[in-house]
Image (cartoon, rainbow, N blue to C red; front, side):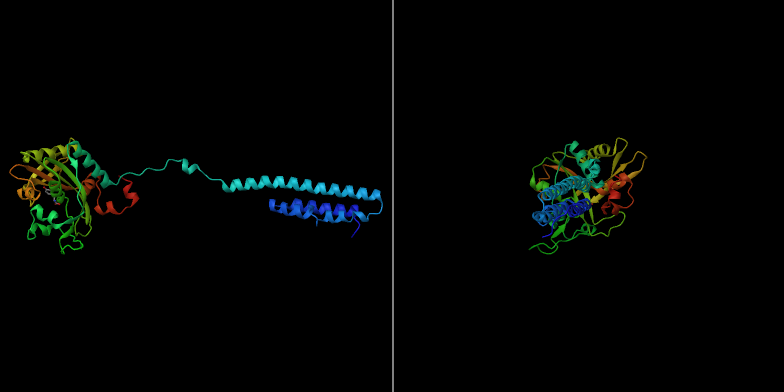
Length: 339
Ligand code: DAH
């Protein structure tokens, strides 16, 4: 056991203060606290040698010096701990800081796709004219899609629809199709409800077509069907005209041109006239064929009706002067944002 001298105490204190001054973290301080003020610390060791100091006077003086040194070390630890606590908190706050400004900016709002917009506007216009919206399945039986629409298997008009067939559990091959038009909804609506019927049926249709600027294998149509007593061609022409003005604007008008469809007799194509005098072909229409009424369970002696059908994508394309139909279905946000 060495006898402590005031020089030993001073050296131990200075060394302790120096290591406290060099501490960089609160963990360092905790470690130094145990090390410098603990039983194995230099000052404690010196203190345990106190008994070997000869004179009482000297022992008292050395004891006082040791106490002062320990207090100085304890004070220095407390002070450094306080300072480091502040810096550590500041560093943590800086590290955890979240820049909330970007959340404060109102997020950009999206909008409906150009085809959806046309679809919804069409529904609105027809609802305004007193029609209801009907739906049918996209996977159809060939009976609903063709047969019931006065197109038996041998009918040449079937070839015009490049039909996609579906393998369907149990059904004979070639009897389940992806609907080639929205016209089968006419049959479903007649079978499901009682006349009078005033309905439109927008939806997706499918044809085995190679995509190009004006064709897509998946596209959209809207079908119209009216069944009531004493419905005649004048009602059809008037409805088409009212629709044209409501949808395109008062500067537009419409005309019917004789045509042929198996499910209507007589049949017509309808065109619209733009304010600049240009005629655009829009769709097909006609008086519902008696065979179609019968397939729908409706007596042609009692009821008559008209039907029409046209492409929705085409209308969106005309309206926005989109060159290539394929653009509408790429899902490219830069295209979609423009409309
Ligand atoms: N279904 C026909 C097509 O896809 C369009 C059509 C023509 C529908 C005349 C009709 C109609 O309801 O009367 O080409």
